[in-house]
Length: 445
Image (cartoon, rainbow, N blue to C red):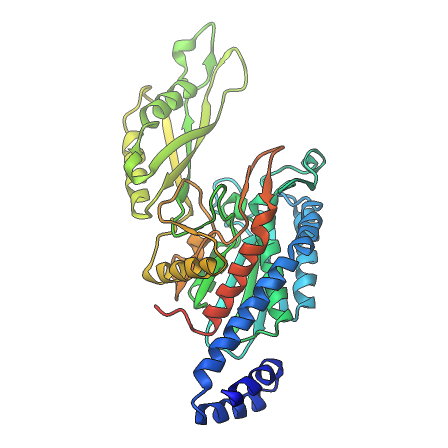
C-alpha cells in the first residue's frame, strides 16, 4: 500500500502518455492498477463537479451575450452575428470550425428554396474510442425587435431572456462543456463534434440532411433542448411533424347580382376543414390542427380561391402515412361541385423513437446524475414537440438522447421565458461526464 500511496499523487499530476504507460506497467506488476485507476477516476469526477460549480457565473455571462443578439429563424443578420460569436468561442477552445450555408428545398410549401441560417460545425480529435456529437440550435421563434421587451435579467433563481429556454441555454451548455473538458485536459474520445444550426424553429429544412447524415456517422448524439421544468429529465421520444396545405379553386361571381353563378372556395375549404378537424387517434398522439386560413379579397365577390395550413403531430412515423391517406380520401367528397382541391402533405420532422442504444445512454445519464444526489426522469412518451434529435436518430449509428439543456419555462413566450440558475452546475456536470464516459467507450450497447 505504501507504493500505491506514493504513486497516486504522481499519477494524477503527470500528462506524458509515455510516463503514464510506464507507470501502468509498474502498477500492474504490483497488482495495484485497478485500485489506482478507480481512485484517480473518483478524483477526476470530483474535479469536474468543482469546475461545474464554478462555471455558473461564467455561463450566465455567456447567456447574457447570446440573449443580447436577436436571432429569429428568418433574421439572417442576427443568426450570422450570433454564429460568429459561437464559432470564435469554439475556435478558442481548440476546435476546427466550419460554417456550412443552408437553404430550404424548393419543394418546401412555405420557404421554397429560401436561404436560411448556417450550421456551425466544430470538431476536435482525441485519443479515445468513440465519436460524439453535441447539437443545439441558435434560432428563435421571435421577430426582430422583440428583444427590447425581454432583455436578459436575473430574478432570484431565474435567468430571463428572449430565447433563453429555447435554445440559447443549450448552446451555452455545449460551449461550456467543451471548455470544462479542455480545463481538465480530457481528450479521451476519438472525436468530439458540435453542430449548432439556425433553422430548427422552422423545422430544420436546411439542416435536416446534415443532421441525418451525422447521426449515422457518430457513435452517440446528445441534443441540448430544455431539460425539464419542475423535474430534471432527458427524453427518448419527440413528435413527428407534418405541414398540410389545402388550396381550393372555385369561381368568382358578383355576390349580390349572381352569387349562384360562382363557386365559393371559402365554403368548400370550410367544409373540408370541419370534416377533417377530428382526424387522427389521440392514443397514438396523431392529431391535426388547422391553424392558418386565407380566402377572398373583395367584399362583394364570391371568392374564387381559398387556402389553409394545418399542423399534424404523431408519436410514430408510420402513422403519418395514415393521416395523409385519410386527408386525400376526404377531399374527393366535395360540398360544392366544380371546385378543385389541391392538397400537399410535407413531412417536416420525423418522430424521435427510442432505440436500445438510446435507452442505454439514458440509463447512464441517470446513474451520473445520481452521483451528485440528483434524480433524473427519463421521458419515454412525446408531449407534442418535435426536435432535431429525431433527425439525428432517423438512421443512427449509435444512441441519440434529447434534453440535455437546463431546466426552464416559457419557450416561445413573449415576456416570460427563463431558465433555473440552480440547474446550471448539475446539468453541466451531467453533460461533461456523459462525454467522458461515452468517449472512453464505457457505455456499451
